[in-house]
Length: 226
Length: 227
Image (cartoon, rainbow over all chains, first blue to last red; front, side, top):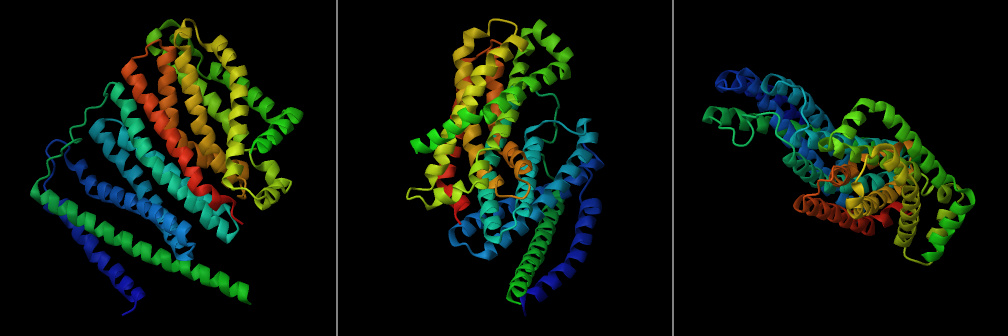
């Protein structure tokens, strides 16, 4: 069985998987006592965030691999991971405020994780724009790989600087959920199942995007050949 | 390498285009900041507790001006074909980076020496001289990071279609942690509230940032200029 077939099957399996995830989140897991129904968004928000980070980590690893070997495939992998990471992180930035409004009483706070996520998003949008702004093949790969490395190194620096900045300021918003949110076993089942489903979604999207990248590459080769 | 820096300085002395543009730009930002934050500035003058916010104004002006100058770093090399000559020359390619790094530091430093007194005149009420040493140290550490990252990224952006549009988009997110540090430290200076423990935490952070982004170009600059 070839890989595209496996991918097609996975993509089809995703439909029932998502339905089960929705069932677990909305019917199986109990409603959180303090936050109420709004807490449900966490089952989507957190898996998206983790997979977004997974995407950016893949960008970093593939960028280093590209710089070392100059093999086109790593360039394609890095770009695919960046695109999907941006989409997931965009959804994180949208679902976050939807939850923050009922829970914290405000759409946005300059809290550590929120601000870091926003900067992360800006870094990789920059990466994406850079990749689309260079015409020559080899240069595009090298430039975006260099930026992919710089962006990833920058993320922990962003996180700690914002954390230290905030620690000196008074805490304005009380967050009952920050720190150890006590997860009930049924909530855990729903959460980890949702995480699993989103990770499968990430893998399917990655495989499709890499295939597309390879096809583009082949097309360019064919055009040059003729 | 000295001759490369010398070349940049001589051409700068002849045209003065980069330094004068950066300086005038900073003055314009000061004027705009004054009107943009008019009420806030009145409060800041009256209340020492919030005087630290002026540090933010200073760095808005300095970093925007820095981007303006950094954008030009490799433009003449690229447009007049100097880069091809430099790449053929029998020396390590990272020297191209380091010579540009030092000329940018010098240009930015000159602009800051002229514009900082004007900033003080416009926005700072009194007494900050007590912490002048810390302010200068902050600006030096800030400049090292800004120029280290900016020179590297401008070598990339000069090769893109969008050119000057690309640098700020790539540059600002990367220097956000550095900006957080320098704004914090300048805040301590202008609020006359330098707790040694906090100051040393932020100084260490800036030094760490500078070291990281002075090592990165060593590792990656060859990939950028490779042809």
